[in-house]
Length: 485
Image 1 (cartoon, one colour):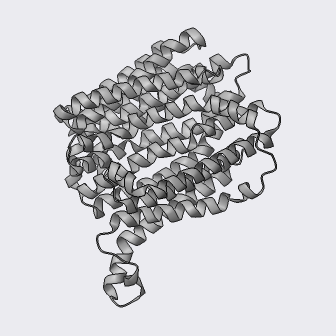
Image 2 (tube, helix red, strand yellow):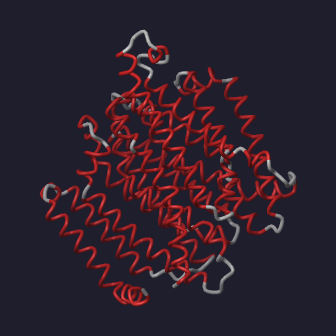
């Protein structure tokens, strides 16, 4: 039981490092919704979608490869230096290429070259921080990791508030003063990216001593091994970016208005809570999986962890959907955006499926078959693209939401089926399936049946029934944990 307590503690610490910054960053959603028209919010969402794709390319799976070889190699310094130098030079090459061809890139993407310039700098600064952050996690320094992450987002948040809310008032109050010299009308999108650049630059400066204190050398042989391990992760990352963000780009290319894209993107953020749970869990679980792979009872451990992930995730999923109409008043405080609320249950459930897939994917990482993860992710990306092309002309952004849940659901099922043969793990499938199925049914009842959706009493009853079902099935384990306390 102490093993699970250690995992919970580790997940909680990294959860603080991830969830709190994400919570702060999601405060930007209501700020943008209030300040930006739907069309401009849609434009920002499209640019950030491109940014996610390029973030994946610039890290090219090196973060996961770093963890793998950091645990395998005796010379840890060599792993650190090889990964750091690799990321450094590829980032510099991208910086030169991006700035040199920013006008061409702007023409291809229909984005102002000025915003291309800002995006390039953000991408490079974030890429340079990848290995220093990974080093902190590998060396078990979660509090330092958390402090830097929180500092980054706090800086970004404060700058956004200043540029979008305070600066216009300061400039208006004193037209001939200093503030008016740095204020530009109709430049809200530019201020958003300037805020990101400053926050990323400060983060890099804090982590920059890692570049000056490198003690190992670049090992070409090790680098090739790391790239060989990492490139399937890169492919999987690109596929994930397609599943998660390509819809915003594709919606524009298929002539959906930026106003509709803005509404869709804003309501999409109501999947926040499941995203936070999944992200914090992933940060804690990935090092745990690798460090316990040699234990004799590892398969049973992974099975137990997966079951309780489904239990906690099911509750969070149902809770968010039951109270979505309350959360929207906080995260999307502009009724003009609420016409896209119908996609919220689909996105929440999609993120839950992705979290389950993360658990089920442990088998191919442990046997160094990361190519399988790339193949599964490519299947998910193919489902995303196919359904988007079919459904967007018929259902607009609702088709994109359906494509997302279908993609993650298919990845979850494929990984489970393949894992049974390659790395058998004794999952308690009957219980997992019952929790998952009940969550889907109760979510649909509470959100899509008007009579139920309008009655919080009925929705709380449904939530209580779910909790009772969990208690009845897990009573013995819960009582055993309580006695240990």
